[in-house]
Length: 151
Image (cartoon, rainbow, N blue to C red; front, side):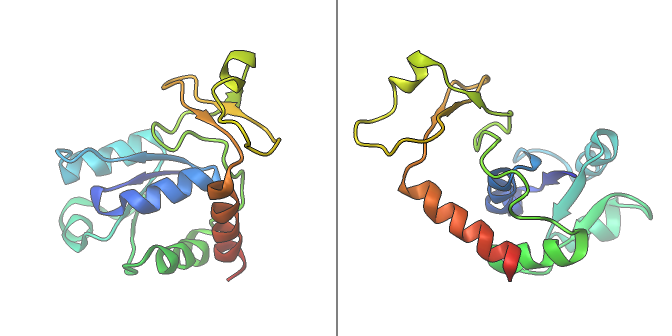
């Protein structure tokens, strides 16, 4: 399952990436009809809270999901119920910035990890060169994803 989040749902898009889903985020200047066409062309679900987009730009059969929830936790529950999103599908396998699939880090990348970080897998984004390691933020995010999966 792949997603395209409109600008209203940027935070939700980051959480979907954290869960391992291929999730694109619309640019600020993307027009609504273009978003619908992009979702259709890329085989993505377009996620939005914009009722006008659904009413005026999306046609029957378009892969558009109108979310009613305002808070990320409620939107997470809505996606789980409506589309079967598994919030623990493949956690932390995609870059949070650019959505690329992460790769195991090499020795040079591991040298960029701060001192005192617990042992664990270190990953690297092949697009932006960002390095990911198992810090305390990762444990908190794992707990959040597990809560959304089990709620």
